[in-house]
Image (cartoon, rainbow, N blue to C red):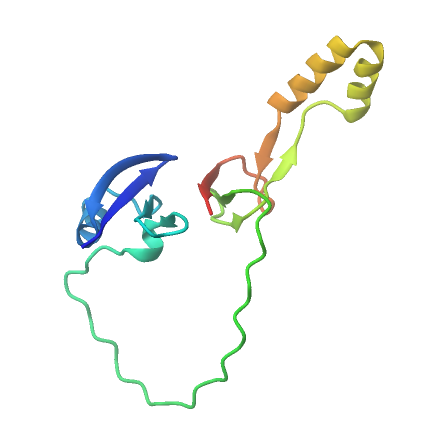
Amino acid sequence: MARIHIARGGSVIGVHEEHAVPALVALGEVRRTDHWWREGMRSWERVGATFDAPRPNPTPSPATPASRPAPAAAPARPSKPAGHLRYTCLRCQHRFAEPKVEKEGSFLAELFYWAISPVAGGFYTAGRVLGTKHLCPRCGSEQLNDEPW
């Protein structure tokens, strides 16, 4: 079996055998929000999207009568993200590519300070950048979880 790398918060936390990951998820050592990668993959994937914890007694699904399959629609191509991160709001669980950005202060005041002195303008601009807030576009929460695409 292949050895896979598990990452949390941007750093690798361990290397495990692929067949052991569902058990590690069940034990809580690996979270479903962690990411995994193995040699040959193009990008990291979320553990919860690929590996599930083993279920003790899986219940068989009841047999359903065969129906005529619906015509297959063309798969929708996801739009190319502008950044390398994808966000999840921890309050409303909304997933999105671009957060709503709010900066403190005003652009006109920034122009005024730049007109007075480049030093004053630089300090005001730096203060605006440091005070930038990334918000959920749906509920306005600052509690966001970012993960790589």
